[in-house]
Image (cartoon, rainbow, N blue to C red):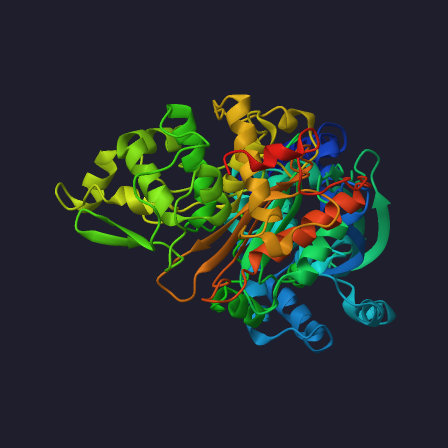
Length: 612
């Protein structure tokens, strides 16, 4: 038969077809080899390297924070982080199980770590921050059992002064998912420490630095074969240092003398520069406890504590200013021409004053008698200032107090600061109480620093700085910065120099003459000027205030202090000696020579008696 398998011609055609197919196959193989070797070699080499190499973050040291004399307020000490390299979830879970006992991983924390791994499976998982030397040694001695575990040296934040600086310095903590999603944290990675409060948060971009990268080689199972070190150009860059106007020794002194079982705060400012010398709030907390993650029970105890130790009472608390407000009334009255230093009112103080069907009391039930403005400031007579408020008028008082910034924050360089509260017009009362729901008698409470009037320590210190210097005060700031030192408030006292000096003289009488409400806390070497305040509140004993400055005629420090419930009936004010001791210590630190006759104006001793 022709055309069958035995036909030679058929076999030749079939052989040629097979040879052709084999040739095509060889061409395809050759082309694939060429592509792999010459055209895609770089890509596959890179992919192979990526599979073989793992990057490990090298954390940057945060910048050191120094006080005005170069002492460290926040610095860094060596610490170690233990992390698991990326891998399958079951490998991660098994690694956590092996580490659980030695690293004291609670079941809750282990669950949290697995959730973090699920959310970011391609990143190393930080298992323990700030591991102890014993924990690191345990891993290194058993390296074959823990080949997926990396040990990274991380500079650990330290606050040498502890709780004394908590509210100004803040603390650092691990960045959270919400922060990672923000544009200003675009270069941050999970597990990185960031400023959470205070100066650590305010100056995060300056303090943080730039993390570096090192590489480790792993095998097909993901275990570490060897360390390859840091690639050129990928070294970590430490953050910039930050210098403060704070006097750390004075800050520690404030912490040591603040009444231990009381709540309150104290702030001290250099009136010439606006630099904050002391910022202290009590009760406080230890910011070192937050490093590496604060235990949940400790966090809950701080957050739920009735004394609110996390609250910065300098920037985030309002208080009725009480009689410290009487200097604002005096300045407004002098500016508008309603008051002079020699002003006497129609009614002498007999313990109270009737107005619109109500009786408004003075703090001294037997009364102060007939007084002028200087004596009214010295003895803090409520009845005199009730009548001052009537002379000034409600509309003028609201307008002028708002001009002086008492409805605005002081502008300190911290992440959050509340503003003072003060009505800006009659409409404010209408909106709050309804038309016809309030009376003109609100002027009486406002005139003595009560009623709808609540201020922060910073706003009161800012006003007294203007009174002390005669200039628009610089916005208070913690960082020593030329730009911050140029930021003055947008208001002035608008007082003549004569009127300002008369008010300073009256404040000198408060502290340095018998009958003055702060006479018991006068300084022995310098003249301090200031005003006490007793702020009524519905929750217990009155709050104790003091705001003042020294030396009175060459001011180097303005201090504002408050002790909550710190002025019980018939008991000395607690804020006054607290502020006095801080002022005395600061002037001593400055090396200021003692005055020849403390309590008397240097140029004219009789001027203290003006208006007497």
